[in-house]
Length: 392
Ligand SMILES: *Cc1c(COP(=O)(O)O)cnc(C)c1O
Image (cartoon, rainbow, N blue to C red; front, side):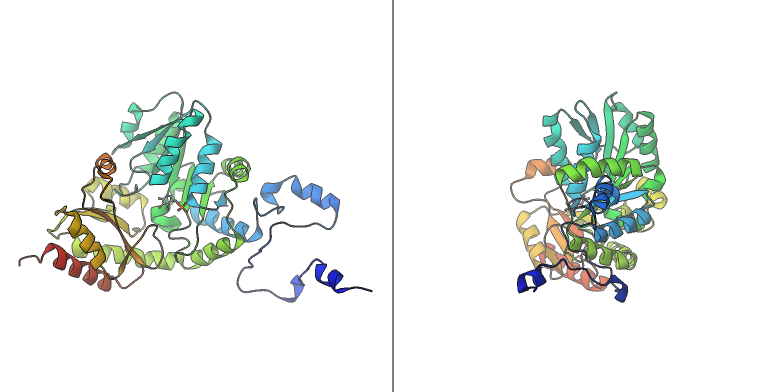
């Protein structure tokens, strides 16, 4: 006779032939099982391309990887538990003791910290500032193994000439690794311009709703498999099936959202670009001719993250301004619905600002999905109240 223990302990097998869900399934499981030991032996011999344990691969995550690889025009993609997981796994896999890496311009802060930290493994990371690709030549060494950069860069939002950088790297047998989070996979396709490895934080535009953390590496099958086997498997930066599902949902609306961000940020910048209370705006749309040429060549739309500096550097006024904004939340990260504001100056980090060449009045703004006119009014009202009205 079967008892209650036996009944509740039976392995659950859903009747997969009786339904087809509209929404993809969240395969919320740690591991997978097999009908016989021969199947187990066969499947576990190729963990990259089969399902054994969710720390490695999961069907929901696999669907997300296929979508991201296609969108980016890459052979293969591997999704990670965070953008930093993708970055650290890539560097961990592709670099060896004695290697030299060039990090160009303003890199995402935590990635730069990683670069400094891996010094202890005998990998030297050099952060240099360049405008034109030829300037790299001066810093290239025989052991330069990779050129790592963002385009546009964090905080200064300066674009680089991808094709020229790829050409220089190829001539010197170095990988090009590009963090392309700012433009999302919609507005920029670095692999089409000969970049070897593209990285995105999925926590930003792809997720799009401030509710998931994830990252992805996209490139040739050979490189991505290597990063899977060594970076992903050994460091264990695994995304949950639920977060992969949220990222798939984010991808469904990504093109539509990016179109609005592009429209909104241009409208916002048009409204403030000639304001005399603003010293400088850092965004390709309002940058110099060379930057606009690069934007024309490499971007099909604009991301909505940028920064600016006020003429007046008073810290109390800056605090008042940021607090006065109604529609810009004070917070880190970006890419969700809500517009955001974040000053660079914290009252005690002036060296950091000097290193990056910023004024104390440097703030980062993210234009979310609200109506652009509402955001423009909000920004201008705060400007008038804190920095004084313009005389006209
Ligand atoms: C947020 C961000 C990262 C880090 O991604 P996480 O998902 O937060 O780990 C890396 N690069 C850029 C440009 C980012 O904006």
